[in-house]
Length: 249
Length: 244
Image (cartoon, rainbow over all chains, first blue to last red; front, side, top):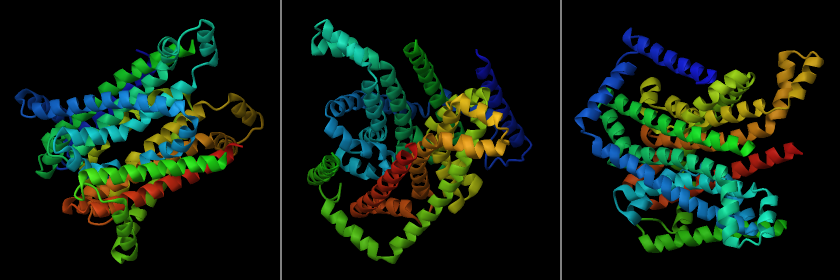
């Protein structure tokens, strides 16, 4: 591991340790925060008992489906927008301010259109994440060096072969950045909709535990969300930085 | 060209309204109020004092959160960006913090700050501050080294260096960060209001959701979208005029 990674680990460890200490000495009362070690113990107990396994599986399933839809649909929309400059110049201001639109408000609309269950949650997550993928696709297509297209033309490659063999690989690092964001936003979208609006899943389980003053359970599940998000994002970031490095060479 | 661009944006808006109307016809009144009904409702809301009370409440929390977020985010970004090591250490941590679903931490915020304004502001800051920190930090790391060398040559004090060299150099990126932070702060404050408040636009929406009042939901959504898009446009203009 590099030096930075060690320092990072040290900071996180010190942070966790100081919270542990503050909780154990009752400086932070247990009604506010329970010690991290207790969270972990409780989380293991919850996972072993299997009481929430269906919720956990459905949440991560929803995140996966949403991320897949976003990656495919966002890429397709990005390609279409890129193909028509007039469309692009009129859509871009909207894309730039998209994140200010509070997507969660449209949940009731999706409930009526798509029914109760996973579909409206996935729809919200897709709505939240898709613009990041569209923007990344536009970015990637913009940065394909012109010389590559010229070379393809010199070899008399067909439009399809140029796209698949030349343009797609050249844009792939940017596309992957888009996929990374798609996963991160799907994570936020799914868990937040479950938390605020829905009646199932991991997000709902946290809200339910909160409303019933089950602090231990609530913090154990929060820890699970934090760990899962960190693990997924770190893995994607590692791949991402490798792709970016390849691009620089 | 300019006219053509506005025409394009106008066509897009018309398309959105059309799609909205189609969805309304598809789902019926219970799913989605029609654009016309929403416009009527919006006018009615504008005339009621109750509505302006909610707006004022949200505006207050949003302003506090934005000011705190900008001050905290930019200064933290400057401090972390000054050394290569600290930015290399903090970078992935910040990105990770940015991508965790912060809604789940809401109970913790409530337990620390109690119900009310402080919790809403804290939630807004939590959402908006991190992107501003990341943008500022990266901007400082990517600043041309010659700028700092010349400031050293002219023997500027650290304060003079920061105010006359570093800040102007990183301003475009900081403004992009503020743009993103602006949107996310608004989102954070609204989510905060949605389930921990008895006032504000977020509360108005939750209330409307429970009553199945889609007109109010859409009216507030349109209002917020218009506000956000306008503010964003102004910030983009500010950024591009500074570039030149």
